[in-house]
Image (cartoon, rainbow, N blue to C red; front, side):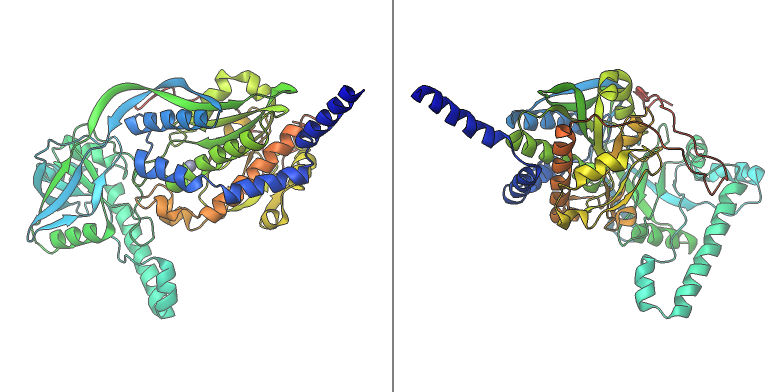
Length: 515
Ligand SMILES: [Zn+2]
């Protein structure tokens, strides 16, 4: 009798520990996220120590290994799943100096996959592209680039962003600057068209004509911010210079000066290297073949350290998994963290996963992706799933109002066609959603720029997103019903006047970096 009573007490105790109400679980998640946040440490290790995560670089591989180790420290099993190969490349020292008419170190860097130089570097003078009548005139002129660095970007008339002009200029002066700049841009486009090339293809023509290297400056319309993408030459280096230094060199050449610069750019080619997704799994206990996927791309461009694109999405999903493993170790459904490789070159890692793991796509209860900066989530679309309101709305009810009050919802919405990895799943008709952030000047200042670094992370907002994602995941896991995939009748696209079609799946590039 006594023994049974004890047993009864024990089972009542354990079930009260486990049978939390959504409200209790949400409160526990909030407490853990706020009082024991691992976000600053994760961000430091990933952004400061490992650095940018360009596909095919050793840093990308280090990041995958770091993620697996970090998950395993939390008791979560994880592995790196290979899905293809890429051109291996590693950035080295870039040093760009002006040697004459005075000595100054310039602010710039090699573009991704740019051919390198020797440790001695290349010393050469500079040349700008003149306005020529047509491609014949260009072909007659082009031998002039031999042995020179070519300045291929339009020099910006101002290094002040428009918002700064708007604040301080007279309205007349602001309008005049914009209209002069428009005219300059039009003339520049015409000048490039006249050569018979585009701004992308002209570099190869300059290379073939014997240029020593290409100097560009791709200003991102914010103080000190430049976009840093990839080079497209075979042998000669392509470097991006800050607006300030580029403008100075351009004015010197145009004024008949003959500046001399030296470029050291010691990158290494590493042959073909494998590419990965990091996949972490907390197995489900009741419906192990149904899945909630916490999704973020892991790769980045390498002008900065990929802090907001997509370091913040990455640490959001890792921290969410850590908290759930601690508070909700035996979920009803299987929880997967997908940290995708090579999103930046066309959603390649997630498209490969969709092809290679059809059972997860088939069993998907919901996927939550975060990939547009450090801001708190302000937008949630139903992605064209007719009944998305019913389940997402129900799950959102467990999220504190301090978080949901910022979120505008849009049901059933339209299916995402690209932009980030949820689209790879939506294309297969699987319920995948984007936790879409407030911008924090993402497009000008951090997206694919040299300034996408740790200091731009707004930890309060990222923590807000962790709490949101963890509660949505818990609710999706606990939901007695599997989510509906019924598609809404899509609306007319006002731009084309035609009915929208559901996007179709696309295959990844599994052999990247070959032209
Ligand atoms: Zn991104």
